[in-house]
Length: 306
Image (cartoon, rainbow, N blue to C red; front, side, top):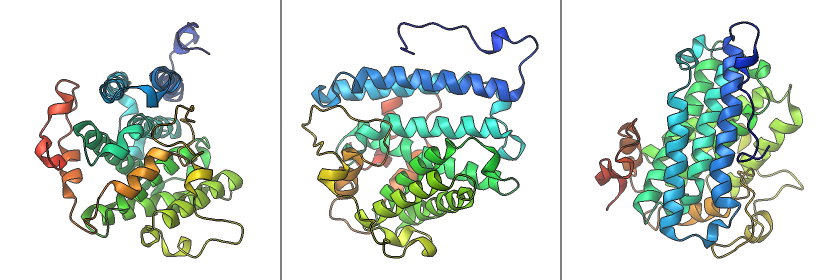
C-alpha cells in the first residue's frame, strides 16, 4: 500500500491478548520495510541520477537516520543474543541489516572520493559482518529451515558486500570479508534442500559476481570451480540494464545483483593500489556512533582522507 496515502491500525493493538515475541517481530518487520519503501521512493521514484550530489547525500543520510531511529525503539527482547532469539526475531535482525546495506548502496561507487561514500561503505561493511555473525551464531545451535525464505535474500545481500570488499585484495579487510562470505555461502547451501530454487539462484549469482569481479579466491573451494555450462559472468550492458551514471531510467532497487553502482565500485573502489592495506574501514566500523548527531563527522581520519 502507498506509504503516504494508507494508514493502518497497528497489528499488535488489535490482538485480544498480549503479543508474543513472534508477533512483535512480525509487526516491526512490516513497519520497517514500509518505512524503507518510503525512504527509497523519495529517491528512486523521482530519478536518482537527476539529483545533485548534495541531494543524494542528504537523502541517504535522512534514510539512515530514519531507519536507525526506528530500530532503536524496537522491543528490548528482540535485541537479545542470537542463541536466545526466536526464528522470527533473527529474521527481523537480518532484514534490518540488509535494509541498511540497500540504503547505502547508491553511494558505494563513490566511496573512494567522498566523505559520504566512505561512510556508506563503512556502514554497509558493518551490516554485512553483522549478518554473517548472526547467521554463524544462530546456525551453531539451530537450523535455518524453520525461518522464512526471505532470509535467503538478506544473506545474499551480505555476501555481495563481502565480495565487494574482497576486491581490495588479500589484506586484512579482504580476508575478513572472505570469512564472512564463506559463512553466507555455507548457510545458503544448507538451505538448498528446503528452498532449492531460491537458494541455488542466489549461490549462482554470488559465483557469477565472484568471477566478474575476479575474487573467486574468496569463495569456499567447493564453489570456486569454473561456471557450469550455460552460466556466465555478468555483462555490464545486459546484466545491469545499460544503466550508466547518467541514465535517467528507473532502477530496480530490489535486485541487489544487477546494480551499476556495485559494478562500478568493484572496478574503481581501490584504485591501483592492489593489495594495499585497507584497515581504515574496519577501524571506522568500530567507531560508528550510535546516535545520529554529527553522523558525517565522526573520526574521519580513519576513512582514507578528508
